[in-house]
Image 1 (cartoon, rainbow, N blue to C red):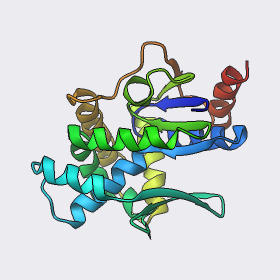
Image 2 (cartoon, rainbow, N blue to C red):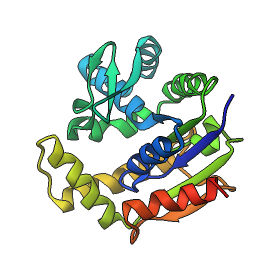
Image 3 (cartoon, rainbow, N blue to C red):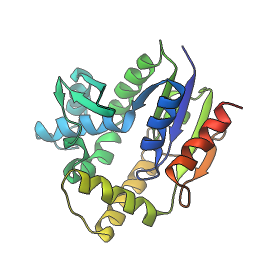
Length: 219
């Protein structure tokens, strides 16, 4: 197993874009675990499975083939061979991803796949439980956060990119709901690892976020 950089934090904290750039600058493999859970959620919606069907959703997650590929400098997510990069960012998936991700069996299946990904390469992995559950012994652990209003502005840009329009008030409500579900679930909840370095990105530029993490890793 190579070097593992774990970056956790809530939605809109800047962890995905920052993790991608950190991985690129270090020439490490980048893994977006949030995209993996979104892919499972998309498959759940397509199969019309209610969240209460935990065993069926877990079995579905186990059968899915989720992988990533860089295309023209954009990180694409594939679900059973289909490019679902934009579809997993829809508001419909966003509304269901936290309940689906809270299913213990789904988290166990995804964590197994994530650990497998890190067996051969140096890796930057971002999510919500990387430093606490997936890789508690990661070489570097970071926890990124930001004011919810700033996070909502960032999320709005994501929605606009895929042609969806939501108000700031709607997005703030969505983020607060996700935060509550993610931090209170019984299995591997969203929380800062005791030894993680906290980075508040509220007033940081993208480049400042990247440079701060790189300066620590390269020290």
